[in-house]
Image (cartoon, rainbow, N blue to C red; front, side):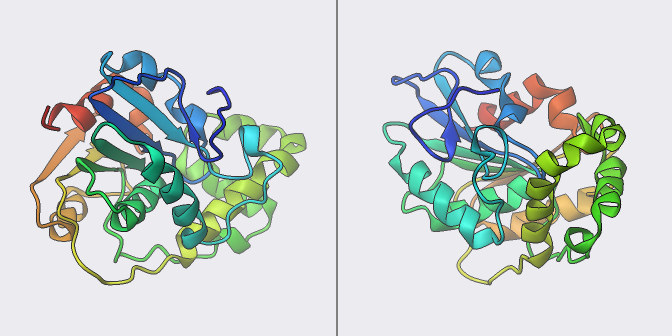
Length: 245
């Protein structure tokens, strides 16, 4: 787990005041800041890594789970705005890509890059009723998508009261999200998908090019939907290597 800081939303394992670049990482639905716990050690010495901690999990377990995208965006944006002294790269995986995109739209300073991982474009509605299902139905969806801890959660019902409220809240955010048209981003956008990820096709990933007037690149790496956990160093490298020094 990343150490708690004075910040409410951001966790930084290794502060680097002289960093040339600050990377802010947004977790997937049901995820937490600890999903990126290894990234500070993998990053170059001149890159500072921050991981977003959504409410209702880990050291924010006492906070009410999120109910809407606007709630997440408002909270995170205020703290990201306070990061200064170096260009910002926003990286989001799955639901986190949506949050990162919306934060990029709100920032007063144009990010150096937006990296969207394992996610189709914001106008492709998720919809669905996962957040309305009973506990068994919610856990079944977690198992279907996979990822670290999914099988453990399915076999340990005693953990459900601890973990399911945050997971349900994240699915509510995702399933009730509706993209609001507006000005395109001007920063570079990079899309990364897993070669075996059934959630996003290359065609869907390429549509992110229409969301910016800046450069667009797309990469395919090995792995399923949670390829950032399987290939952390490679994904991190893609997130920062194209950003100008």
